[in-house]
Length: 246
Image (cartoon, rainbow, N blue to C red; front, side, top):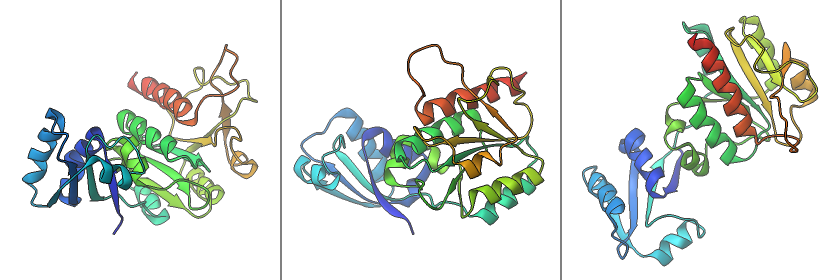
């Protein structure tokens, strides 16, 4: 069981919406008592879980000084899915596949933000490697705001091998690189796709890039060299979404 602490009004509300039956314990700042906190407590008290009055100092310590907004919960967070589960998903799909592949993206904030976008745009899952990649953590769940419960994260041992397997299932592997002339806005994204994003600053590893069927880039006219991984993923995912709406 993967139990962790989640805090903050928005994140706790997301946990209530998607995982209410998995909340075990609640701590709240009894001195705060604002309307949003009281509304959450009213929902929580119906669950039958342990609710403990606390104070800001203790909650600050529990969250390492983060902005907990007067409420912390202990909740079972989603587990990552296996490579076999990914294969079963692909082989039983009836929709046109769209997966996001994160190559050694270690920042949990980026994974959480990617999950939110993936949920909004109907991505079928996010694929990460077991080594040097963020898995599902309390921070990921907080940033994802409920999307960690709705979008599966598949953890695989060998990313290059699973990309080869996806190609055998007639899924095109699309990589992102600044060293290509192909714009994301001119590429055909209605085909079965797995979008590969590399870590910010370093990009995809060479072995990963070798598995890509084609590379695309986001046109940029400013002075910055690259976008944040989750921002770039959001732009591309929504271009896929837009093309498939036609």
